[in-house]
Image 1 (tube, one colour):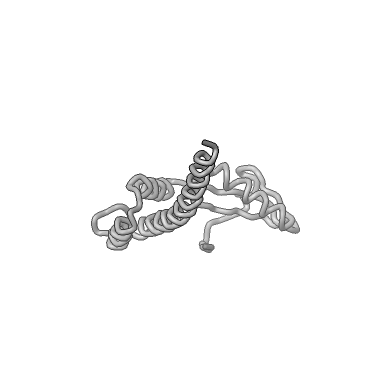
Image 2 (image 1 turned 120 degrees about the vertical axis):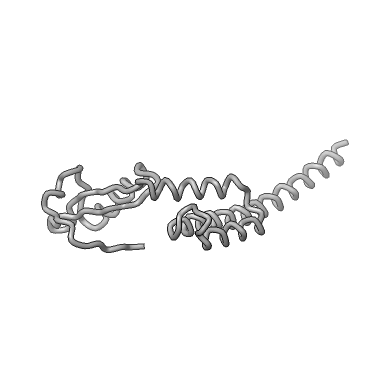
Amino acid sequence: ADLVHADLDSKWHNIRHKKGAEDAKRSIVFAKVAMQVRAAMDHGGNSPTNGQLSNVLKKAKELKVPKDIIDRAIKKAEQAKAGGMVIYEGMGPAGVSVMVQCVTDNKSRTAPALRHIFKEHGGSLGTTGAVAFKFNRVGQIDVS
């Protein structure tokens, strides 16, 4: 009886490892498709005339991406466009005033990341209004 039990355990472990590897590969594909959906939404929104989005959705269907993953990616892109804009203020090295405008889906993750970047380069993240009075908006620099 012990031999039969050991054989079943071994079979289960083999299945589990194969399935785990397949799931990991699929999740990478799903994440890439979700990223492509969000990028397509940035270019033309969620409209029938957005050819890039329809191509990505067609590709997702071929790759058998679950509908809920696609829906979450579309919802996330719409939320980011709807006002995930945050402005952080701080002091850089040698007392240089800095304002950073970010588009984010999670403010509580962005603030610590920026605080770390400021600290790493000899600056500090300030509070709202700390340096804003020193600035006039005259241009924009996009960093990807």
